[in-house]
Image 1 (cartoon, rainbow, N blue to C red):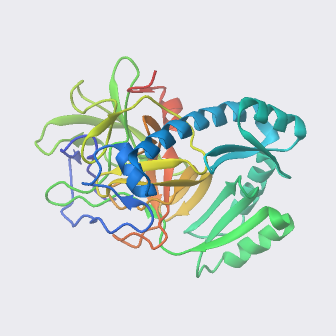
Image 2 (image 1 turned 30 degrees about the vertical axis):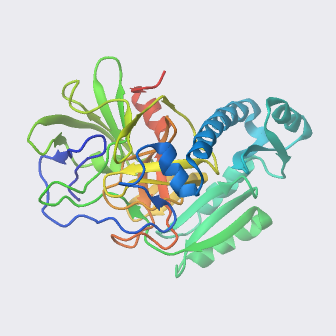
Length: 377
């Protein structure tokens, strides 16, 4: 098991009580998902650089998409099985539905409705059937609400790709195949002599009695206790949910161990105002110890990833390049948190030519651990 260090919310790093002295991953040039570290000083500036737009336009985009995500969550809850998913397109929220009555509800709520052949339950059923067919690492399965299909991403030279294609034949046009290169692996780094590498802090949380750090489960798994480089105590790992999920909990030994209620912007920080469920097309940024602040777009949600460390489910997929050491860092937009950095299709310590990162929705961790993230109302 790799040794870990956590460093996102402050200039210092967390290290486990026993660390290996090996080289850490180094940042690589961005290829899809702009490198923002050292350039912009806040999220609006970072997004402006990524999108190639002005700062004012970026601020308007962040506000508009935040409101659209809230509306998507409400409509999804109201429509239930009558929707095939939501996505952002051209500045609009599009909600796919299976009947005219549901379409009328969407339109009345201020979103754009599109009637599709398959609802979310049918698409999820197809996805589960394909997940049960023979596959291998570097395969992913997810629903694309924009095309109303299940998308299977296969390794380019996979020996079991034929089994996946055979299993999909009975579902016809409901399934689409893609191929990707790179190895899908957890984004844990390797701790070096100066305590760099390892993992990143995602969110700070409380149960009104104690303070906690939420990070990736593959980071806390196997690492019982954490300290700062100066030797001061942080606290023990309490929970590790991995594989299947990918979230873990660290107890903070004291109220001032780590800054609470902020995202690191590399440089600077920004307050957290809550969390939400991501939708396809959302503009997001990832904060990580190795790559700093990088921005991109949500490509899919509820993705199952068969990586080298095991299978993880219900992931948020983005086109942000992240590397070893970024695991556990937050995926967010504006003041809203969405997920924790989990896996990436990287080539060793380099970004893939078409980068993909998968993030664990933070809502699962919040509900499982019965905590409230700092900054949430």
